Length: 603
Image 1 (cartoon, rainbow, N blue to C red):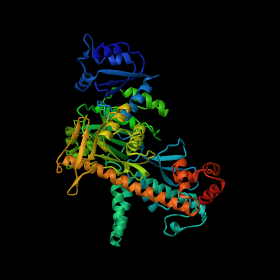
Image 2: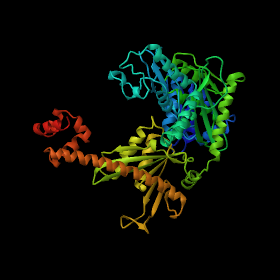
Image 3: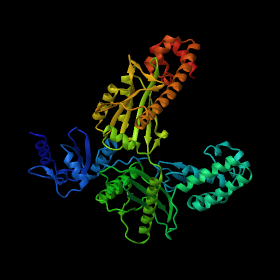
Image 4: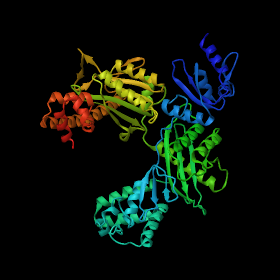
């Protein structure tokens, strides 16, 4: 039985149950993940039979995907809701070729105040507690901390959680930033006025920004330029936290607005949040379009990702700019999760339509600004050079470092949107003894985190053909859609060869070695990634080695020999683990006397 016959048999024998289906190409690479209320009906709708071929009524995007498919796998679930969640999870973990991966899966912070406290104060949280005594403001993509810092500068509130425990007025009282209820019997009415003023600043950003600009001007006049510059930056971040609008609803209505706009190269998602008739915050994400782009899928994915991690304090109607095929399913799922009816609508007129149009206007501006930036084509050139699946928007590069087997660490650096994303760098403490095993340990740990932190488009490995093969095998076993290349130095007599101080680097891909001129900017780009990973690995190695040396010397001073230190490290793995170990555990490795010395040391 040939491949087509096998595939046709699978399709005709699918169960009529809810589930998720996956299409694969001839190389076993995942093409597409889809959900279905009825697997048999849904999958059969893609095909015409006798002979097996793509159905004539498919979109060009799906027709192209179906023409590449040679295998089908499926997972049966209990309900259509379960299928929706599983589909979203698999797309985030595996990055299929024909699905859209939106990596914005972070939770957004809220500013909150707990009125059950006698002297309540404002703080920031990402965890929502269902309580009538707690008021939430947000969500905020940026600026939450800046707004919070500002109201504590402008309002005489309890500044810190620990203040009330002090029992005595502190510096905050002296500089007129606190009423000091810790020492004085502050009337509730007086404190409530300060709370109300802070709430007004949170709701009315114009007033808050006006007061901050007054302070900035004062600092500038007083030649306190550093403080003025700090306020200038804070003002800019607060302004970025939401789009400007003249729309001000007479009623206290709440809406979550999600829109998608795209041009020839990019697509952007803009989210706008209206609370009590006022726009409180907004955010956007921009992605490079693949040839198989689908705006409606991007919009559905952005809604699911936003609500996936927390129940919002306000369950608001969702306004969108496109009719979604799975809108009713998403509505049912969110209604069940939140315990309150959720509606998704495409408004045609009135204030709701104005809100969607406002979001679209800002989406157009995001795209315009992206277009006016000086754009490098280096990622596209890398795709063409190595014949990658698609242009790598996110790249992860790996390196490891050690000294004679000590302080063995690994490092991952991230390149995205034309620059390094240092907040997403990761380092790893490694147990393996040789470089091959160390790289394997690090890459396996990264694969294990795909569920929480979606895979990139490309891995760059510091190593040769052997490590490239290892990385490809790990990716294939994970099922994720990630391209892999490697970079190594040319070796002469088993040593890395350098000419005039320049490394003769070789690039490695699935098709074999790629040798470029030293002046080639594509080589420079991969070298830049490798060098940054190397720098990050070396820096972390030095810190780890210094800590180990300090701990080791300290133990030796206290009467524990180097051999005993090594024995402890071999058993417990780290000095932190030795510190946390019980007396009995240490005694089983060494003896009672040494165990007493170590426990006394770490008291």
